Amino acid sequence: MRWSAGWYGGSARSRAPRDGTPVPVLEPVWTVDWPADCVRTVGDGSAELTVIGACGADDEQLWRALPTVRSRDWRTLTTWPGSYLVFARCGEVLAVIGDLSGQHPVYWRPERSGVWWSTSATALAALDGAPTDTASLAARMALAQPDVLGTRSLFRTVNRVPTGHLLLITPDSVTAARYEPVEPEGVDLRQAAPTVRDALTTAVHARLGDQPVSADLAGLDSTTLACLAAQRSSVAAVTFADERLRDDDVLYAARTAATVPRLSYRSVPGGPRTVYYDGLEDVRSLPVTDEPNAFVVTATIKRAVLDAVSERRAGGVHFTGAGGDAVLSAPSSYLSDLLRSGRRLRAWQHAQAHARLRRMSPLTVLRRARPASRTTLAETWQQLAAVLRRPPRPWVPQAQQPVTWTPLLATADWMAPDVRHQLAVELDTAAADRTDAPSSLTAWSDQQDLARVGANTNGWREIALTEYGVVLAAPFLDNEVIRACLAVPADQRAAPGRYKPLLSTAFTGTGILPDFVLNRVTKGGFNALAYAGLRANAGILRELIGPSSRLAAAGLITDAPVADMLARAASGLPTAQGALHLAVSTEVWLRQLDTSAHIWWEVNTHAAAA
Image (tube, rainbow, N blue to C red; front, side, top):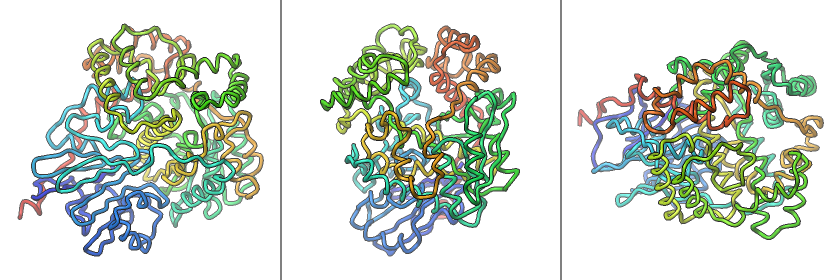
């Protein structure tokens, strides 16, 4: 696993990351498994700057950024294309800046003589064997919004930098300081479209070089990236084409490859094992990740795609449309914001369109949206705390429940009473401590969706890199792409009757994407493979998250409701799939913590010699 770490303090530490490479000028800072060309440092004595990852700034741009470091304009250091970590120092002030999607998370833990920081919470916990934090795990499973508990990580004594914040360390303090506005300023869709096109084009082209290039070719998002890459490079495109999906991805992919120069195409047929939840009988066969990761559920499907890529070209960069849905669309919860702002006519017009798609009445759509329009984020958490103090609820599909700032997932109703009570206490505390909550439900939801998608994409990236030597690129999760897209109000991004209007407006008439792609209104789904996997692997899942699981031992699940949900799934009945994904991925991660022989630290020979 690629990670970075550093020490800020008055004395040298006796430990260093195992197999770590010291970063020139900035010792004691180390990187682990990062190639040399992904770690670049500039400095003039009064200021130092390091970027770690896929950063589109050239060396001259980094040198020109040193005055920015001296002026402590931290946000400007996050506006280059790519996905990267920033480490900046001016005098005794140090800033460690991750990204807006959680692909480069930042954690810290204080000690008497200084502060350790790292992009791996697990590594910091391994310094003294810090245990997992049950309340944080409960929040992650029940709420699936990473920032609810603020700076709490999944380990005790290890702190997490929330989304949109940076780690700021001085001789007197260590804090998570906000660098991104709580809410973006609104920009009309047509005005924002050229900015989105430029940001996305730059993000793709910055990752191209002499290495082989491959890409997913399925929905509108991944097709856009493949076509952008094909402007400058030959692209080996692949489409997962399991006949159980019954979508038209293959038809569009073949037509696109026949139209766009330098874009070759291959479909990847599914098989008995390319289903959800396959291959979980041995968690050692899965890559170790720093937190529970949703891609363990679909690992065999991802491997099938990467197998096809590797058969055609070894190594290189592979583009995925991950994050596209999060930045180009908006959940129907934006209707709550329209009601909150008094835009009732627009809310009614949009509700009518949503009702036609879902075959329900517009009044039903608005009734679901109205409660959230009358509450704040903190009030929602207080309400959730009250719910958790009562007996578990009967299961109702999420799509039938009222819209809310923070949905309470079915996993909350699987937990033991004492864990539910503990989570309720944490939510009350979080509600009292929250001082910078957005006024818009959509702004909050967008941030949380991106943080979740980015963290999960790291799991897919780990499979691609460790097993295939392929670097996964997700340009929709780049900072500037996120900023350009989310500046467009949600009711314009989710305009009824148009599919992803921001992307189609940005690229219509440019000749980059064929018109038939931009006019596409269909989207594939994986529900069939989810239910096939639930049926085929029912026994393995029953053992994995049954009474002998780590989750059960911690009170994070109880047997009866989980057994009932698995039985529903095996029978093909509607199931809380998201909740099952969370439970399975968390159990796999906990078992890996117990069984992994990974050694994070070694003796720091330089400090020992001193």
